[in-house]
Length: 225
Image (cartoon, rainbow, N blue to C red; front, top):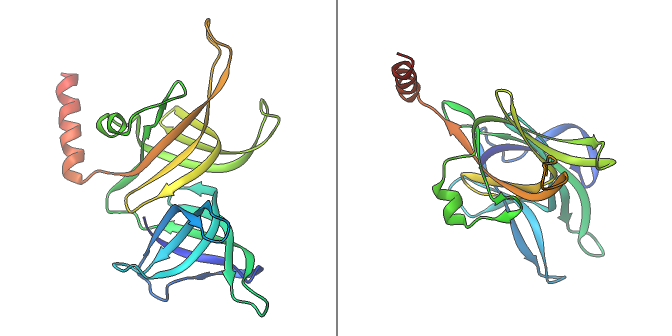
């Protein structure tokens, strides 16, 4: 995703103001992916900031997690590594990120990756209509009464309809899409008690040009006649 990024700490010390990275007003390419930690031979989620159109890594955030998301802004937290006299120094770091939204952006669309806790084939996910479109996304830490603890909750809202993910994590962020995962709370039914089942959202930015909006309005008017 194209974004402007400001780091909030310098060698672990909180700065009074965030420092925008990149040295240019143009947005950079922000990717989040899972890589193998060469030292410990285990997977690690890493955020990397690339110069546009290149494979040159400007900055890297290790063990990254999504802390907060609202509108086109979000916060990633993790650790950065700098050289030291007795070896690399790992320090706390957070990035304040602002997406460079395309023209005529309306919100976010989401395709659900699970159905009743069962993972769907990716071909089926990509071929179906979005479960939610033109929606607003909010991620924050909340106290959940039924869990009796704090959790990172994602809230996807369109009009009066809400979808929620508890224990939300950012799985990856690519050039055009990003993925959130967690657990959705299903209400009690005749056959089942209330349950928490695995769910994931494949997210993309929704856009609508003025021409597309006019076409939608004309279709809606035809149905109202």
